[in-house]
Length: 117
Image (cartoon, rainbow, N blue to C red; front, side):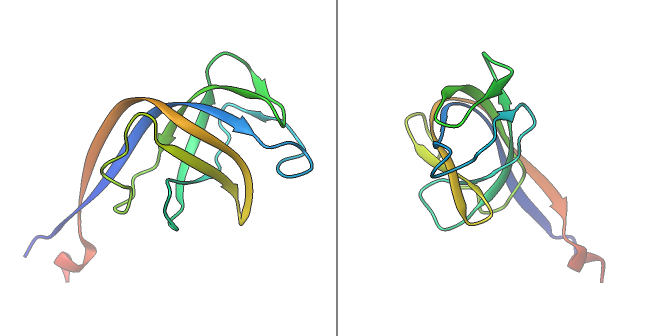
């Protein structure tokens, strides 16, 4: 019996803000930074930020960025323009953002390891 597991992945354009160094990060970020993201849920999702108009972002600064969320079966299916999110490093909130464009949503199907037993 073959069982497929479906995961959602998104590519988003967002306006992000790093918290100031007293409340968030103390060092700047660059493209390739991989925080966790929360979209108004308790679940955290892995993703990668690619800065759009700058090479680095200092604490308390804002910019546009592309966010590639890694595949996960619990990513909300209803992400939309205008939704806000929080960025984490572990349990520490380091920034926030708002979705300004939903560039791509993809469903990734993978055969369950249990179907091979």
